[in-house]
Length: 230
Image (cartoon, rainbow, N blue to C red; front, side, top):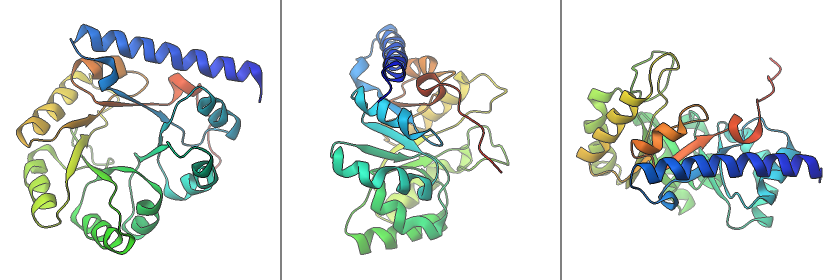
């Protein structure tokens, strides 16, 4: 393993954890109450191995197929891995997602709920589930509109029997993130949802102030992601 790369990755992770911890303390929170999710999508294999060498065990992926290739063998080597799906999930990939991921953060429509319920029954296991809320109501983004979130959460619990662990959001890039984090926290509180997945490389410290229980950090840990071929 490249020693320089290992040191670089280790230093980046230490810096993120220090900043996250300071922000948590400023909010009167225990830093250990906020999980750091390393967003490993499209990252080269050597950077993944370097991150694993730091002791990082929680990783976020956007695509089922890409994650399968990256993590199936590593699962055997690192039984304490926690894999989170943080990208949109197609209903026809529910079976594969159930088999691979410990947490699915992007439940956002009834068709997907039905596919997940069927896949969970057949697999005999149910990942922890988060509902994605489209706090900015952006047409190009997945997620339940805020005004429909209460009814959707109730339906997921009542009709599908899902224990909704958390809510997730991705604020609009051109807007201040704080109001979106506050809105997600408000929806969670009134629905008795315990976890909040919010905050990325540019705003994870702010997210900690608003109650995030996990932050999804990519470039601040791994460096700027290389563009993917079309």
